[in-house]
Image (cartoon, rainbow over all chains, first blue to last red; front, side):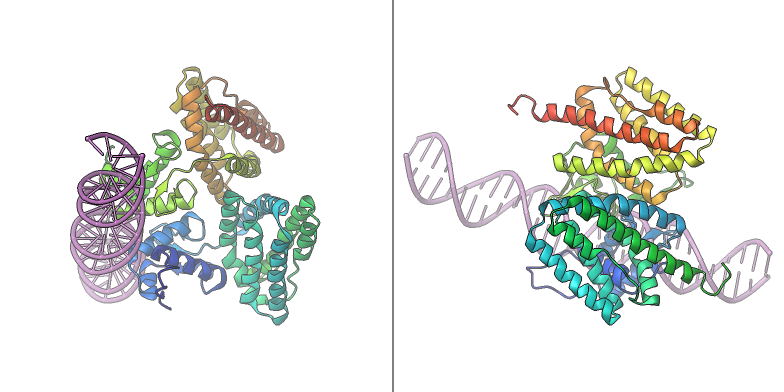
Length: 229
Length: 229
DNA sequence: TGCCGCAGAATATGATCAAATTATGCGCTG
DNA sequence: CAGCGCATAATTTGATCATATTCTGCGGCA
């Protein structure tokens, strides 16, 4: 695993923050699938840092639900079951449209253009079958949109939900590629350009529901792969 | 500050977990008002433990929003503004009725009786003007109810919201006592006893809205105390 | 099969270094 | 001569690491 490079003092973040971000990206886009064990020593050796910052990053990720205690002081990437996905659906539908509504009320045309630019890169990644690019740009689109809302608490909640969902989403996308990944981003941007907050929120809800429905179909096929369901 | 007592090995929890619970209770029921600084060394000296577990507890509480970074690596109890309260209203209304709905579907008569017992203690605390008792029993009522729902993710989210709200709630209750603290607990229990999940969820939404409205009135009066608003 | 010991991993502490806030004192100005 | 402001020192606090201790799980052995 790659070490953590020293930054030129200006962008110098605490080590525990760097470890946190590194592991978070590993969960969202990288090589940490559901069920994978995460050890303190593995991270200290892999990232060449002390164990105190690693412990802090793991505690934080655990508190956010991105990692979970395996009972006997082991931590691992959570494996979602149907119940967990049902909970995530409800939470995402409850929170993300509201963030969209708030973002719509304050978004400038520049903000919308920036979102459109991200969405273009997303479409490019889809057309090229670039799974990692799709995951990253889709994440950036939603995060950038939510950042406009000036609602730090709801934004934190939304980011936590993405962190819980990320590893499982990555698995099915890695397995089935970027085909048939419809999104409502165009509808969201159109509504935002018109300043129609309700329509934007509705489109976001549809985006979330569509995305999870597609995820659920693939997840179901994956889980029941060869076995009789 | 009191030290952490050694438990008889059966209920022996990790030190960082004990510190976490101690600070959490201090936030919900104790002596940590919004704006209060929380220092690592203060906790290590006050609780007579090392600094690593304290750091972990603080990271966890920070990730949950119960504490917040004050910019230059200081942490303190967050001070809620109108925007934050607006976000918390939306999140609580989005999540807690759903937990109530799910709890209602699986609650036994024994569960409901246990909730009624907590509610009785809550009424007693109110009638006696016992602010701390009110805060504790109200918290226990909601937490016990949500625990029935078998929805760990939504439950975690709800607990996080309570943790964000607790310190401010405690301030206004400490200032204005337990008078005029209406709740919908009786309506919730009635609906649950009849197995009417929708009515229970509706009652919970009303409970949340009423509680926050009352909080908001008192908070507003407190903030505008003697000054011209 | 059940028990014991060993390797590995997590927990917790204290020491050390760096950063920031607070305190102090000197010079300047009215 | 008294009060104010800024620079510097001292203290407090946070960040990181190295190390000792404890616990878990596994594999060998009776």
